[in-house]
Length: 114
Image: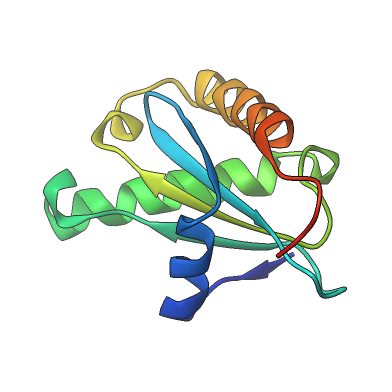
């Protein structure tokens, strides 16, 4: 599993499907190449100070580490957009939210990669 780092990749995923949760939004997009799953994390400034945003980002990264890879589709990019509720929400609940969000993305996703 790789990380998304370039703005163009984040913008491409933003045009894909999305699933909302209380603590985050998951955006997904199928790729046409044979590369690994890539994940990006972002938290906007309206979610608090730099310390709070970093804490949200760390919690999101830990969620993905603990998630079974089977929940994610190969050759896909995902972006987790953190919300302020991620600071106080129970971690186990957030993990369940992420699994259900990924399942919703699979149901919404177009069958052919772009």
